[in-house]
Length: 86
Image (cartoon, rainbow, N blue to C red; front, side, top):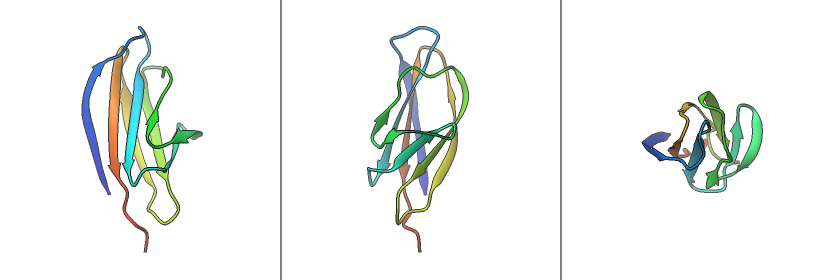
């Protein structure tokens, strides 16, 4: 499993942040704070600043759980290389 954080960039809406998640392979389910929110590649709607838990799941691959810190007016990009399960 490889998790890479990319530098944040300015977001367009004050007092909220955003999360953009990609995976290799794509098509992983994205759960944000335990709620299914989409499939990779995924771009969030406005997210309250603070710590959040991201879980990526795809059949045949090891799930990846990662904490991210969302900052107001910023976009956090998360790139994950999923590992095949045995």
